[in-house]
Length: 172
Image 1 (tube, rainbow, N blue to C red):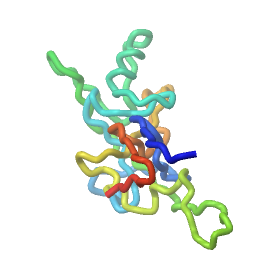
Image 2: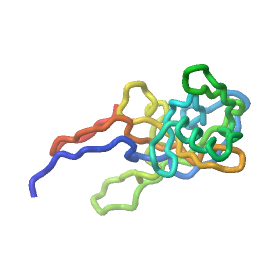
Image 3: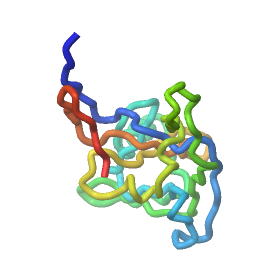
Image 4: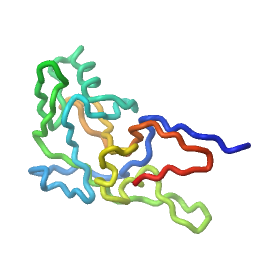
């Protein structure tokens, strides 16, 4: 079978941060940026993964407001903006602290490979958050009693990528 081009759609999972825990910090400056990922959303336009679908915070919150007008985003205040999307401001600083990157089971080729479920933890989170990248850190979220709540950060494709046959996707 000849090699074929592959389209990697927006929202595709590249890697996750594996097992870890949420830690509370007194301010954003206390977050260990070399290893932790702060749950910080800025506006209704920020992207999240909700029910495995990439969508804006605004879409998720506005849909919930149809049945629960008091619904909030955990650890954030929502500020309405006239003629624009709402803004979000952190009220608490909660970060995900990964345990460490785990390796995948030995494939028998003598090499070591990272498991997709924790491969993002091998580098500093800021490496995934640079502007104009095809990938970035997006929070998986769910509704809980205290509002829209973080589940885990994940690295996902933010711009559709076409991989020509026989080529690799290099993330820098």
